[in-house]
Image (cartoon, rainbow, N blue to C red; front, side):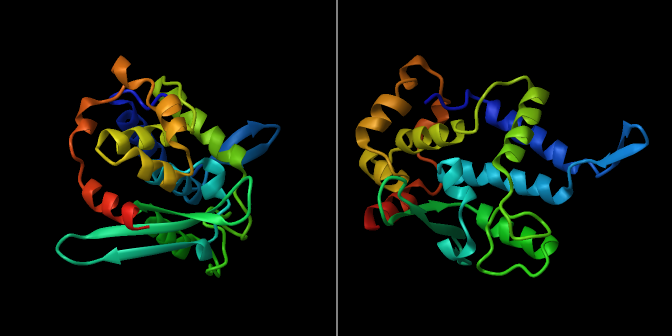
Length: 225
């Protein structure tokens, strides 16, 4: 339930950018054996994975199982440029799915990454596929990268913190709890008891309490969905 402490998310993203900028190399692991460092594709994929968790508030397994046919990206090129994303998230305990709406450019960046690195990419591909084949990236791979980044900045969070952070951010910015709950697949009581119990202790940046860019538009979209 606890969101990122003020300033910590900025540190994490800065370290991710530094890690992504490192060039691929061959490392000597002894006995005349060498291994290649993490590929640029995997690094960029992980960076976008974090950004998508941050923008959407989805659970990890909800985005990792998605294919391109499960989502819609609507980009407007007007004076007020915005990107509205809709994804179909299957219900875990029952049939059907919910349509989750959020704003952000992570999915557009992911499309460009596929076009650049993946051979014969198509609409039926997993959005978090391996570079050479349309198979899912192992969840443990992203967990390993996450631990590497956190160790570099001496912080301790799990990936689920992105969901906690996004939920808290939305509610503190003025989006009605009922709309947040419906969009993110939660009950109102879950949000109040699990995600917002840390707020009185001052763990969240007070700036979030001000109206954030795009929040009014997002509230309108959620209310209409």
